[in-house]
Image (cartoon, rainbow, N blue to C red):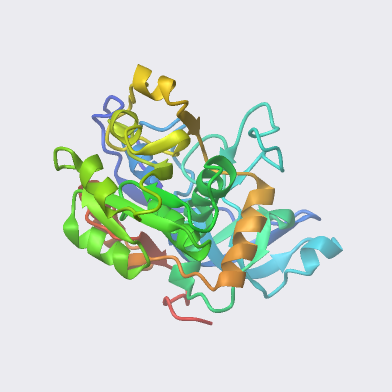
Length: 360
């Protein structure tokens, strides 16, 4: 029978507990008419997985395979033509359900059901196989390795919505600030914005990560740990455009108070996460300059398809920090430690089955 990795329940309060990983056996799925079985070749971690192990994520549960990012080969299908067309194809998986194409948010009254480790969706990608609706698949860009493909779905979707849908400034020549460079979403925003012809600037507490971002096309960057970092950043901007048009932020904290000083009047802060602080004061100075703060979470099925199409057209490659192979609890725990320490630059990946990170 197929195997998977889930979390095991132990006593502890949310935020103080650290649920251990356990290897479980899952039922061999049988696809309905509209479903397919995907034999997974790679899966990838997201910050939500760290929060799940701390019981800090809504709907955290046990006995459900972890992780939402995955790539694999369709090994069996239901009887419908829409399902059969996927047989033997390499696919990437839309990481959630309940959101078709509304620009405002999920149409399903229960919200967006993301795969991996929660009560809202029984599927997860840290497993040998996963049962999916055929309509939730996209053909994997052929030039991506298994590791790169697994690194794309959730971070790519989140970055796409935060940058293209929400920032309003995905335009050539515009100055975009991406905070907290090194994480998967921030790096995808960087890659999208560079491909779109934007001037991209980054912040990090680690100079090595700033240097790596510049190798990927960033114009420059500053350490957010430095007092007055916003002034140093402004000095890096082009002489004919001494302002930031939009900030795509996954940190929170002082991004409004500092960022509003260098944003253009009416500039946008698109926020997809708050890893530094769960609160973000909105100050009168930002009001007077007509600054907009927009929340952005994941994205719709349409945005997922648009994102994958853009990646194929531009031949973008997600950044992989490192990968391990197999449902090996010790090795996977090592990836979680990387995320805890924020030492990664790019995605943390688990290759599965015959997946070895190389292009098929």
